[in-house]
Amino acid sequence: RRAEASARAFLRANMFPFDAPNAATLFDDFSASTSSGVAQATASLALSARTRFGWAASVPRRLFEGYVLPYASVNEARTDWRQLLWEALTPQPWVEALPNTSSVESVAVAVNRNLWGALGNLTGRREAIRFKSDQTPLVYDPLSTI
Image 1 (cartoon, rainbow, N blue to C red):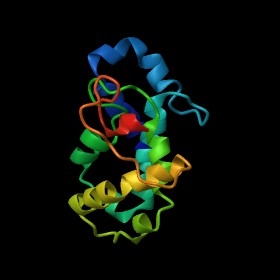
Image 2 (image 1 turned 30 degrees about the vertical axis):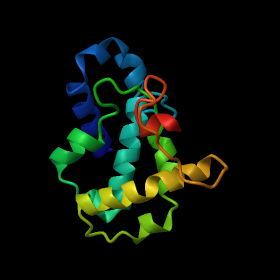
Image 3 (image 1 turned 120 degrees about the vertical axis):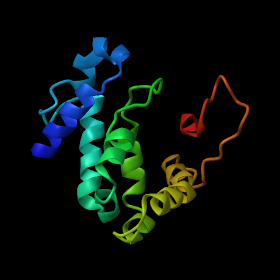
Image 4 (image 1 turned 180 degrees about the horizontal axis):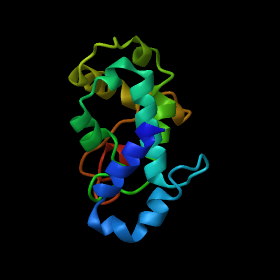
């Protein structure tokens, strides 16, 4: 697929220098359907979102490549957290209800408004996850609470 080849080339060309020693595990065999590399998984979900949702397809290429496609940001763990978010959010009625013409800003607001409730449902307690500040070093950010 052309989109996957383009994504692979972009990610490899823009990989953080400190990720280079781990490139084999990050990328694994990017073309294999059974790949365990985090770059494969995150790129696949990013491309799937662009195909499935009109609002995702309209994200400008520069924003997509800089903020959606990458498998991590600077010191973020190289883990496959996107699968968790995909499984928690895509079945939500409000996601499907977002118009294809939605702006990046309006989608971000909708996600921020609904994300913690959707993730809370995964805990089995059926209540929104609540983030408590001043919990470092145990919890660094809201996603660490999961």
